[in-house]
Amino acid sequence: MNSQLRDEKYMKVALELAQKADGRTSPNPLVGAVIVKGEKVIGRGYHQYAGGPHAEINALKDADRQAQGANLYVTLEPCSHYGKTPPCTQAILDSGIKRVFIGMEDPNPRVSGRGIQLLKENGVEVEVGILEEKAKKINEVFIKYITTKRPYIILKNGITLDGKIATKTGHSKWITGEESRFLVHKLRDKVDGILVGIGTVLSDDPRLTTRLPEGGKDPVRVILDGRLRVPLDAKVIKNDSEDKVIVATLKGNDKNKIKKLEQLGVKVIEVSKGPRVDLKELLKKLGELEITSVLVEGGSEINASFLNGGFVDKLYYFIAPKIIGGSDSIPVVGGVGVEKINNGIQIVDKEVKLVGDDILLIGYPKTRGIEEF
Image (cartoon, rainbow, N blue to C red; front, side, top):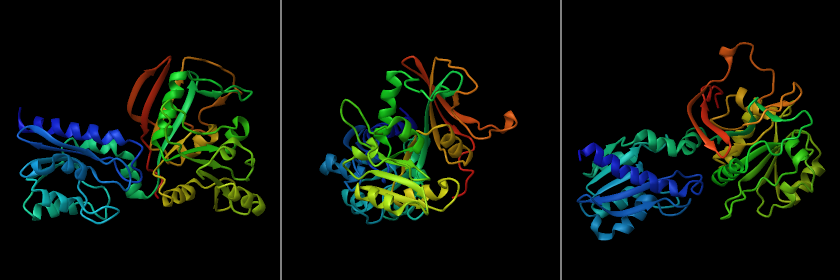
């Protein structure tokens, strides 16, 4: 086996380890590490939760004294600064690791490259860029957040073949099948927040929790509610016991209602007065709360606002083999729409798969990032 194939082989193991903690390390990245000596893996580790030991530390502990003279494969550049844990670079130097193979540099502009430089200055051979694109892929949420301080936005919709999310009466349960709904709960389990509009709360009274057989993590529930119409006994508020509900509203609303919501454990975010909640301002505030990813499960108009504003980073479209028709039924994206086909939002880097009877399209809007933060 040539050196490139060998290095990729061990980096793949590190990448698989990193993904074992998917949804559990926010606001930190997913990181996996493997220590190899004489073509034998002698240490494995991954970053399991924010504030816990980093991947390199866990791998070094697993390898114990065998690490002397070995090679380390790690998906992300080792840290060189003190945070909630000591710097990994010093632990690597103390262990006697001879070579370090890195998937990608740390995207944090304040620390990027420093860990690599420190290792090299102390005689450790370093190679960067092993399976770099895959390393970036598993940390697309972290990269967006650490470079912009704004959450990564995932737009999810369940639609019919003719692009509808509800009938003319507003009925929408259930467009997609049970398998698709199960996958949505797995998505909820991995993100920091889930966002809906007040219309969804008023019409469906959802809990917006994660319901999986093995349990799961409930995301922070964010409700766009410009006129502060959310009922005090709504399930999303009433059934919450962890103070994980945010209501985003316009300035100048009923202070007494705000006080009552806060007494129920709801965090109320007031944004600049306007016809609607300003998404740019809201996402900035959510980023300040270290909410790194948000699953948007909005209606037609919310979908339009996020897409047209250039806020969507990734989308999941569950397409059911159903046609409901009708010019008054509700389309997946509302708003004014474009005048020419060429002005539409192109979806790139697509992945298509069957989920039960439904078709799932995962992709990235080509226009993402047009809104400068």
